[in-house]
Image (cartoon, rainbow, N blue to C red; front, side):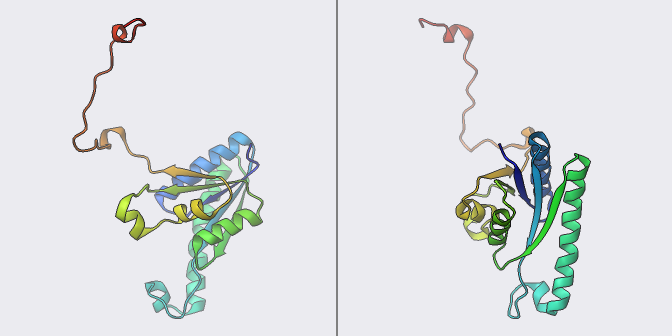
Length: 174
């Protein structure tokens, strides 16, 4: 089915779920794995605090160290499952573009990413690299959602909980 899977990670707990899922899928399918993390390029004029305070060389050192830590942690997860993984750090002004470009350049046939599943105004305001990859990629994208404990899941306001129908009610001829 899938021969080469790309998983995008930023090192967050949520993207760790995507890494775990991609590793398990790659192991089950005997597929190759490409782990990618994306950083924005340095901009002389920026509103990002780390870019304002740093020189370009210092910014590159910091993003390189962070990328190395993120990638090596994800690669360790893959190695523990017996999956070999290529590590890629890409710099792009639009991280979603770097993810798609890497997937295409590496010959991947599936992209795995995480999503908070934001809706409404928060989704519009915050945006999402996952949403952008879904929108712009021609490759299949597997979205791993945040795990929520069943006891914590909220029911919509005004929802009604219906009892299970009895077997007599479901019997033919009723």
